[in-house]
Length: 338
Ligand code: KG4
Ligand code: ZN
Image (spheres, rainbow, N blue to C red):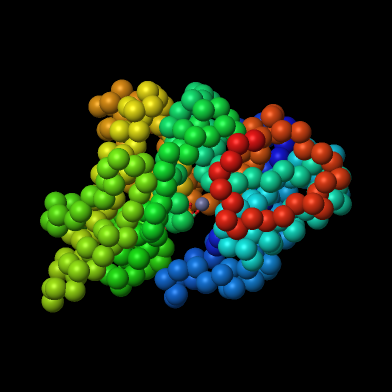
């Protein structure tokens, strides 16, 4: 089954073509980092405008890579998938309208995907060994969520972000330290030259819940920097990153133990963090867990993960043709069962 997927929930305009939820034939991303970098965050109006400019280009590039002519979409593509939510309304709308139009014009089924499900299926796309049930941690710019995937499409949500998500904390700390946007990659790089034990930042474990809260940790970095005339940015990056990583590992390992799960699947932009990847691999060895991390390019937003999620959804859900026009975006969409 060949799926053409479109992702536009935030600041990446992306299109991909994936065969049988596994083989990535095309994975095209138009990044908007240069547009938003000066604001240290995504500006919704600028994001939706850039999506409008880029959406046809990324779809066209994906089709070219797959050697499919526009006029052959109806014959060569089995379904169109798009991100319905969560995300920025104006951004989501651009992807949804493009997907709906293609589905309607080419008379092929349209399937809506939750962006978080995309992150859940990024590792599945690359690893045939992953079989539910497993524990999943989604760590991105907008989410920090622990979910038990009981089966593909059947989720038990354990807990999530109460305030700043892990990626958001990286971005805000980078802004505070006058680094660049997005903050994750630059903090990751500088932390390699710093001492993670230099500053003892708090580990917000929120014991008794599976929720996460990183805004207090961010405030601890603010207060530390405020009281000093000079401090080593590399040490602050390493110490802050160590606090985030340890919090994520401790809670995830505890959840795996509590629910008796031996596979842990990570997803989302922060899963590209080198210290987090190393720490998860070590924790896996120590705890006897099989830890799966998507390759870094599939951690951050992309459409291949949306195609993978759509493939599994289409195995279970009957998508009725001609219903393309009833689809709607949902900026506050929560994870729900198929
Ligand atoms: O999944 P994603 O591309 O978009 C959302 O769905 O939010 O995640 C973006 C987030 C940003 O906050 C960015 O700073 C963070 O992922 N990120 C990283 C790294 N690469 C991206 N955080 C830590 N270390 C990284 N190497
Ligand atoms: Zn994402």
